[in-house]
Image (cartoon, rainbow over all chains, first blue to last red; front, side, top):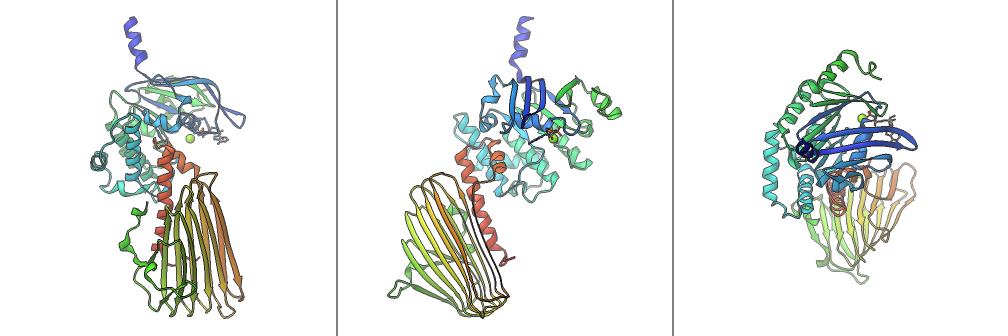
Length: 257
Length: 226
Ligand SMILES: Nc1ncnc2c1ncn2[C@@H]1O[C@H](COP(=O)(O)OP(=O)(O)O)[C@@H](O)[C@H]1O
Ligand SMILES: [Mg+2]
């Protein structure tokens, strides 16, 4: 019994304890608790303005957010004390609600730099340019993206759906331990949602974890989350299994308080 | 950095090979529209060039400054014929004690000419850059359309930029604008790169290359004055 508990503790990927966050003196996240283990898929659902993107921004390490209380551990490391780039090379991937456009930078050069940064952080020799290229091509195929997708610029001149696919390619190539995806389903038509969801299913392993942050249940028809949390007014007011998704679909967020 | 520029996209012109007159001015005369933009190259510390556009031609010039200890470039463009279209593009990436001056004068002597000038650059270390760009519009140069821009990104508090766009206009029915900005890279772009694990040095390098790409893209576009 003791052994089993130790094992479970070791497998905790992300642990958020009593996290309270404010912006400009306004309290946004209130005493948030969340624990994610290896191999799990969590859905965090909530209405607009609930604080979902604020949570993402704090985990990503964006400035301008005041941490009032609480702590966050990522694989045993104190996440809130790490630099933004340290979080990434440690295996945290953030999929942004609005991926930033960087005209003049190609996805391939961007990914090459990101792979090299990861190797450097792990004190490893970076892969050669041709190894990087073949990995990117392989992932492009794996995700059923157009063959030359990696030649496009980082999100500039891409449609909303293509931007999400660009982030998925980054995710597939960088192979993070934990991916937190903020509304990866927003602005997509149903076929695109299916494509994104199927690709996420393909990327799931027992060693990585996903947090899908979403307003709508739609994408969760195609990816089955292990846990569902409802975030409202900056608090997780209810956690449960897949069945919660159906409750939200049937009666919306108003039923939860 | 310079590897991003494909020489095949340009007519490379090494101006050090041209004879200079007694005041050290090199005179270049152009009577035809070249197929490609002209890439002016020089390794000299002092360069004085007079460029005469003798027919109603369309022509673009580009030069690039990096790893230069010290360079002063003085260029006078003379638009001698109505309907001439001129593009002037430059990129500078200066570091350490690099000191560079670009002193331009664009003389619109005739009507219906266009000139588009774009200078962009990134300064690091204790680099020191100066840009003076003057558009002169003669009383005869009706319907002149001229734009001059200079945008600098400063990556160090010790770098210095002095930017002076100037207009000297003696004709009423013209459209002349200038703009100069000095700033940093976009913080959202920087954050996005950072969130994928890129350290500051790599981020600056990637964003500097993107800044250069913007100039190269503009060269490919038609004379984008408006
Ligand atoms: N940069 C900001 N400055 C001030 N208020 C903000 C900022 N970002 C978000 N907020 C506020 O925080 C609350 C939560 O927003 P957000 O985290 O974006 O919610 P969600 O992603 O769930 O829609 C909202 O009331 C929003 O107005
Ligand atoms: Mg949001």
